Length: 291
Image (cartoon, rainbow, N blue to C red; front, top):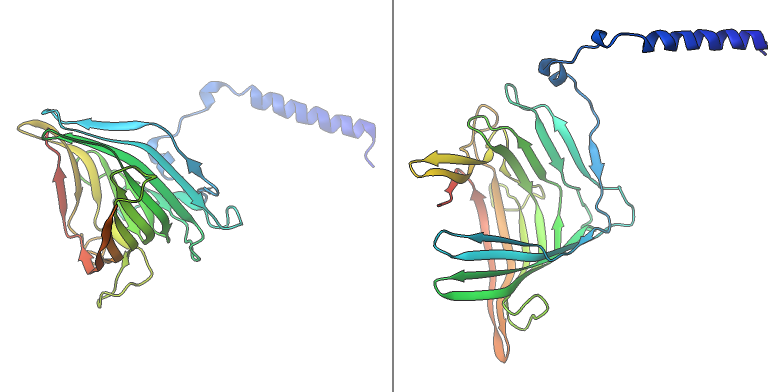
Protein backbone atom coordinates (compact mmCIF):
# COMPACT_ATOMS: atom_id res chain seq x y z
CA UNK A 1 0.00 0.00 0.00
CA UNK A 2 1.10 3.56 -0.73
CA UNK A 3 1.93 5.71 2.29
CA UNK A 4 -0.08 8.80 3.15
CA UNK A 5 2.80 11.14 2.07
CA UNK A 6 2.90 9.42 -1.37
CA UNK A 7 -0.86 9.84 -1.83
CA UNK A 8 -0.63 13.48 -0.80
CA UNK A 9 2.19 14.06 -3.30
CA UNK A 10 0.17 12.55 -6.18
CA UNK A 11 -2.87 14.65 -5.25
CA UNK A 12 -0.72 17.79 -5.21
CA UNK A 13 0.61 17.01 -8.71
CA UNK A 14 -2.95 16.47 -10.01
CA UNK A 15 -4.12 19.78 -8.55
CA UNK A 16 -1.13 21.57 -10.05
CA UNK A 17 -1.88 20.09 -13.48
CA UNK A 18 -5.56 21.12 -13.31
CA UNK A 19 -4.47 24.62 -12.28
CA UNK A 20 -2.23 24.92 -15.36
CA UNK A 21 -5.00 23.68 -17.67
CA UNK A 22 -7.52 26.14 -16.28
CA UNK A 23 -4.97 28.92 -16.55
CA UNK A 24 -4.61 28.54 -20.35
CA UNK A 25 -5.76 31.86 -21.85
CA UNK A 26 -8.95 31.87 -23.90
CA UNK A 27 -6.95 33.21 -26.86
CA UNK A 28 -5.27 29.78 -27.19
CA UNK A 29 -8.61 28.21 -28.19
CA UNK A 30 -9.38 28.57 -31.91
CA UNK A 31 -12.76 27.95 -33.60
CA UNK A 32 -12.86 25.17 -36.19
CA UNK A 33 -13.49 26.24 -39.77
CA UNK A 34 -16.39 24.82 -41.80
CA UNK A 35 -13.89 22.72 -43.75
CA UNK A 36 -12.48 21.23 -40.55
CA UNK A 37 -15.93 20.54 -39.15
CA UNK A 38 -17.09 18.85 -42.37
CA UNK A 39 -14.06 16.56 -42.22
CA UNK A 40 -15.25 15.10 -38.91
CA UNK A 41 -16.85 11.69 -39.45
CA UNK A 42 -18.52 9.45 -36.91
CA UNK A 43 -20.17 6.05 -37.10
CA UNK A 44 -22.86 6.72 -34.55
CA UNK A 45 -26.35 7.98 -35.30
CA UNK A 46 -29.61 8.24 -33.43
CA UNK A 47 -32.04 5.36 -33.03
CA UNK A 48 -35.57 6.00 -31.84
CA UNK A 49 -38.41 3.63 -31.18
CA UNK A 50 -42.12 4.45 -31.33
CA UNK A 51 -43.20 1.43 -29.35
CA UNK A 52 -46.78 1.99 -28.18
CA UNK A 53 -46.93 5.44 -29.80
CA UNK A 54 -50.34 7.19 -29.87
CA UNK A 55 -51.46 10.74 -30.58
CA UNK A 56 -54.67 12.69 -31.19
CA UNK A 57 -55.77 16.31 -31.13
CA UNK A 58 -58.04 19.03 -32.49
CA UNK A 59 -55.49 20.94 -34.60
CA UNK A 60 -56.69 22.15 -38.01
CA UNK A 61 -54.70 23.07 -41.11
CA UNK A 62 -56.57 25.23 -43.66
CA UNK A 63 -55.80 26.49 -47.15
CA UNK A 64 -57.78 29.28 -48.80
CA UNK A 65 -57.34 30.33 -52.44
CA UNK A 66 -57.58 33.95 -53.62
CA UNK A 67 -61.09 33.25 -54.96
CA UNK A 68 -62.30 31.98 -51.58
CA UNK A 69 -62.19 28.21 -52.09
CA UNK A 70 -61.11 26.53 -48.87
CA UNK A 71 -59.83 23.13 -47.79
CA UNK A 72 -59.04 21.96 -44.28
CA UNK A 73 -57.67 18.85 -42.57
CA UNK A 74 -58.12 18.36 -38.83
CA UNK A 75 -58.26 16.01 -35.83
CA UNK A 76 -55.44 13.74 -36.93
CA UNK A 77 -54.96 10.61 -34.82
CA UNK A 78 -52.42 7.81 -35.01
CA UNK A 79 -51.47 4.79 -32.93
CA UNK A 80 -48.98 1.96 -33.39
CA UNK A 81 -48.97 -1.62 -32.17
CA UNK A 82 -45.61 -3.32 -31.75
CA UNK A 83 -43.56 -6.40 -31.16
CA UNK A 84 -42.93 -7.15 -27.46
CA UNK A 85 -39.26 -6.06 -27.50
CA UNK A 86 -38.72 -2.27 -27.45
CA UNK A 87 -35.81 -1.04 -29.59
CA UNK A 88 -35.47 -4.41 -31.28
CA UNK A 89 -36.26 -2.76 -34.64
CA UNK A 90 -36.07 1.05 -34.29
CA UNK A 91 -36.00 3.92 -36.73
CA UNK A 92 -32.45 5.14 -37.43
CA UNK A 93 -31.26 8.67 -38.18
CA UNK A 94 -27.74 9.14 -39.56
CA UNK A 95 -25.76 11.79 -41.40
CA UNK A 96 -23.89 10.03 -44.18
CA UNK A 97 -21.53 11.14 -46.92
CA UNK A 98 -23.22 12.10 -50.18
CA UNK A 99 -22.16 11.00 -53.65
CA UNK A 100 -18.81 12.41 -54.84
CA UNK A 101 -19.09 16.17 -55.14
CA UNK A 102 -22.46 16.35 -53.37
CA UNK A 103 -23.43 17.47 -49.87
CA UNK A 104 -23.87 15.15 -46.89
CA UNK A 105 -27.25 13.47 -46.49
CA UNK A 106 -29.59 13.13 -43.52
CA UNK A 107 -30.82 9.55 -43.79
CA UNK A 108 -33.87 8.23 -41.90
CA UNK A 109 -34.20 4.45 -42.18
CA UNK A 110 -37.55 2.84 -41.33
CA UNK A 111 -37.73 -0.41 -39.30
CA UNK A 112 -37.38 -3.59 -41.35
CA UNK A 113 -40.55 -4.92 -39.69
CA UNK A 114 -39.93 -8.40 -41.09
CA UNK A 115 -42.88 -10.04 -39.32
CA UNK A 116 -45.31 -7.10 -39.77
CA UNK A 117 -45.65 -6.61 -36.02
CA UNK A 118 -45.53 -2.82 -36.23
CA UNK A 119 -48.93 -1.66 -37.49
CA UNK A 120 -50.36 1.84 -37.70
CA UNK A 121 -53.97 2.91 -37.24
CA UNK A 122 -54.76 6.45 -38.48
CA UNK A 123 -57.66 8.79 -39.14
CA UNK A 124 -58.32 12.43 -39.97
CA UNK A 125 -61.27 14.64 -40.89
CA UNK A 126 -61.46 17.04 -43.81
CA UNK A 127 -63.81 19.55 -45.42
CA UNK A 128 -64.01 21.74 -48.49
CA UNK A 129 -65.96 24.73 -49.79
CA UNK A 130 -65.85 25.28 -53.56
CA UNK A 131 -68.23 26.38 -56.32
CA UNK A 132 -71.03 26.95 -53.84
CA UNK A 133 -70.77 23.46 -52.33
CA UNK A 134 -69.68 22.86 -48.75
CA UNK A 135 -68.74 19.42 -47.47
CA UNK A 136 -67.65 19.15 -43.84
CA UNK A 137 -66.55 16.44 -41.43
CA UNK A 138 -65.77 13.79 -44.00
CA UNK A 139 -63.11 11.36 -42.79
CA UNK A 140 -60.29 9.16 -44.00
CA UNK A 141 -59.67 6.03 -41.91
CA UNK A 142 -56.57 3.85 -42.37
CA UNK A 143 -56.31 0.44 -40.73
CA UNK A 144 -53.25 -1.79 -40.37
CA UNK A 145 -50.69 0.26 -42.28
CA UNK A 146 -47.43 -1.71 -42.32
CA UNK A 147 -44.10 -0.33 -43.53
CA UNK A 148 -41.26 -2.71 -44.40
CA UNK A 149 -37.90 -0.94 -44.55
CA UNK A 150 -37.33 1.99 -46.87
CA UNK A 151 -36.93 5.51 -45.55
CA UNK A 152 -36.29 9.17 -46.31
CA UNK A 153 -33.27 11.26 -47.32
CA UNK A 154 -32.75 15.02 -47.02
CA UNK A 155 -29.97 17.28 -48.32
CA UNK A 156 -29.34 20.54 -50.17
CA UNK A 157 -30.37 20.65 -53.86
CA UNK A 158 -27.74 20.36 -56.58
CA UNK A 159 -29.19 23.54 -58.16
CA UNK A 160 -31.41 26.36 -56.82
CA UNK A 161 -32.53 26.68 -53.21
CA UNK A 162 -34.94 24.54 -51.20
CA UNK A 163 -34.78 21.01 -49.85
CA UNK A 164 -33.81 17.95 -51.87
CA UNK A 165 -35.18 14.63 -50.68
CA UNK A 166 -35.41 10.96 -51.52
CA UNK A 167 -37.96 8.33 -50.52
CA UNK A 168 -38.19 4.54 -50.65
CA UNK A 169 -41.40 2.71 -49.78
CA UNK A 170 -42.65 -0.82 -49.28
CA UNK A 171 -46.08 -0.76 -47.70
CA UNK A 172 -49.23 -2.75 -47.03
CA UNK A 173 -52.53 -1.22 -45.89
CA UNK A 174 -55.25 -3.48 -44.56
CA UNK A 175 -58.04 -1.01 -45.33
CA UNK A 176 -58.40 2.61 -46.41
CA UNK A 177 -61.91 4.06 -46.38
CA UNK A 178 -63.44 7.44 -47.25
CA UNK A 179 -66.38 8.09 -44.91
CA UNK A 180 -68.57 11.13 -45.73
CA UNK A 181 -70.50 10.75 -42.45
CA UNK A 182 -67.46 10.82 -40.15
CA UNK A 183 -64.84 8.37 -38.96
CA UNK A 184 -67.18 6.48 -36.62
CA UNK A 185 -69.87 5.84 -39.27
CA UNK A 186 -68.90 3.13 -41.75
CA UNK A 187 -72.42 2.64 -43.18
CA UNK A 188 -71.51 4.81 -46.16
CA UNK A 189 -68.02 4.68 -47.59
CA UNK A 190 -65.69 3.99 -50.46
CA UNK A 191 -63.37 1.22 -49.30
CA UNK A 192 -60.02 -0.06 -50.55
CA UNK A 193 -59.07 -3.40 -48.96
CA UNK A 194 -55.55 -4.79 -49.22
CA UNK A 195 -53.30 -2.08 -50.71
CA UNK A 196 -49.75 -3.18 -51.56
CA UNK A 197 -46.88 -0.95 -52.78
CA UNK A 198 -43.29 -1.96 -53.50
CA UNK A 199 -40.56 -2.50 -56.04
CA UNK A 200 -41.17 -4.89 -58.94
CA UNK A 201 -38.93 -6.84 -61.30
CA UNK A 202 -39.03 -6.90 -65.10
CA UNK A 203 -42.08 -9.17 -65.11
CA UNK A 204 -44.07 -6.88 -62.80
CA UNK A 205 -43.78 -9.15 -59.77
CA UNK A 206 -43.09 -7.71 -56.32
CA UNK A 207 -39.49 -8.16 -55.14
CA UNK A 208 -40.07 -7.66 -51.37
CA UNK A 209 -37.85 -4.56 -51.48
CA UNK A 210 -38.81 -0.88 -51.19
CA UNK A 211 -39.62 1.10 -54.32
CA UNK A 212 -37.21 4.01 -54.65
CA UNK A 213 -39.52 6.85 -55.65
CA UNK A 214 -36.67 9.38 -55.51
CA UNK A 215 -32.98 9.45 -54.58
CA UNK A 216 -31.02 12.55 -53.56
CA UNK A 217 -28.21 11.70 -56.01
CA UNK A 218 -29.52 9.55 -58.87
CA UNK A 219 -33.03 11.05 -59.13
CA UNK A 220 -33.55 13.84 -56.58
CA UNK A 221 -36.92 15.20 -55.54
CA UNK A 222 -37.14 18.84 -54.44
CA UNK A 223 -39.42 21.26 -52.61
CA UNK A 224 -38.69 24.94 -53.23
CA UNK A 225 -40.08 28.24 -54.47
CA UNK A 226 -39.59 29.18 -58.12
CA UNK A 227 -40.34 32.64 -59.49
CA UNK A 228 -41.97 33.49 -62.80
CA UNK A 229 -43.62 36.57 -64.23
CA UNK A 230 -46.33 36.41 -61.54
CA UNK A 231 -43.97 35.98 -58.60
CA UNK A 232 -42.75 33.03 -56.46
CA UNK A 233 -44.64 29.74 -56.52
CA UNK A 234 -44.38 26.61 -54.44
CA UNK A 235 -42.72 23.92 -56.53
CA UNK A 236 -42.51 20.14 -56.00
CA UNK A 237 -40.60 18.04 -58.49
CA UNK A 238 -38.64 14.86 -59.23
CA UNK A 239 -35.76 15.18 -61.68
CA UNK A 240 -34.85 12.92 -64.58
CA UNK A 241 -32.70 9.87 -63.71
CA UNK A 242 -29.02 10.89 -63.58
CA UNK A 243 -26.60 8.30 -64.98
CA UNK A 244 -23.66 10.02 -63.21
CA UNK A 245 -24.84 8.64 -59.88
CA UNK A 246 -26.82 5.57 -60.90
CA UNK A 247 -28.01 3.42 -63.78
CA UNK A 248 -29.84 6.29 -65.52
CA UNK A 249 -33.07 4.29 -65.34
CA UNK A 250 -35.97 5.15 -63.02
CA UNK A 251 -36.75 2.33 -60.54
CA UNK A 252 -39.99 0.43 -61.17
CA UNK A 253 -42.72 -0.02 -58.59
CA UNK A 254 -46.11 -1.70 -58.46
CA UNK A 255 -49.47 -1.04 -56.80
CA UNK A 256 -52.08 -3.71 -56.08
CA UNK A 257 -55.51 -3.25 -54.47
CA UNK A 258 -57.22 -6.51 -53.52
CA UNK A 259 -60.74 -5.09 -53.54
CA UNK A 260 -62.54 -1.76 -54.12
CA UNK A 261 -66.15 -1.33 -53.06
CA UNK A 262 -68.89 1.21 -52.23
CA UNK A 263 -71.27 0.72 -49.32
CA UNK A 264 -74.42 2.78 -48.64
CA UNK A 265 -77.36 2.40 -46.23
CA UNK A 266 -80.20 0.32 -47.65
CA UNK A 267 -78.29 -0.39 -50.86
CA UNK A 268 -76.38 -3.48 -52.02
CA UNK A 269 -72.60 -3.21 -51.90
CA UNK A 270 -71.09 -2.19 -55.23
CA UNK A 271 -68.04 -4.43 -55.70
CA UNK A 272 -65.51 -3.20 -58.26
CA UNK A 273 -63.15 -6.11 -57.72
CA UNK A 274 -59.36 -5.77 -57.63
CA UNK A 275 -56.98 -3.39 -59.35
CA UNK A 276 -53.33 -3.76 -60.32
CA UNK A 277 -50.68 -1.52 -61.84
CA UNK A 278 -47.92 -3.97 -62.62
CA UNK A 279 -45.11 -1.48 -63.21
CA UNK A 280 -44.75 2.29 -62.65
CA UNK A 281 -41.70 4.45 -63.33
CA UNK A 282 -41.51 8.11 -62.35
CA UNK A 283 -39.41 9.63 -65.13
CA UNK A 284 -40.04 13.28 -64.30
CA UNK A 285 -42.42 15.27 -62.12
CA UNK A 286 -42.96 19.04 -62.09
CA UNK A 287 -45.77 20.62 -60.02
CA UNK A 288 -46.14 24.39 -59.61
CA UNK A 289 -48.94 25.71 -57.44
CA UNK A 290 -50.97 28.69 -58.64
CA UNK A 291 -51.35 31.86 -56.59
